[in-house]
Length: 145
Image (cartoon, rainbow, N blue to C red; front, side, top):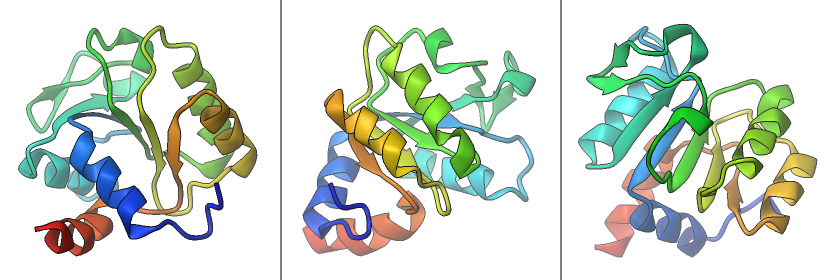
């Protein structure tokens, strides 16, 4: 897939079909963008699971934090990545090692690694990079109504 542009239908289908989202790099600091995104997703009715090894066992926005994706006991529909672009490949490795893989891997603004995306897509995982659901949701989900 060309990750320079996504058709509206591609993003809309993702946002309307996923229910459980793991946020890799979640932070309890409410000044961090990932905290705001997590709150937004919760407010839209998604089940959001924070992932951060430094805060495992604690809660962020009332949700229990897991150290890594493999520690999450339920099926994840989407992994939302708040890590440096240089770490996106490692997240793809972690996702590909899961017994139940998510349908979507989403890299937040500035998170882009085309080689890692190719590996995920080869495994049947849809990929979005350098985008944020907070900016996409109001535009695309309103159009779907």
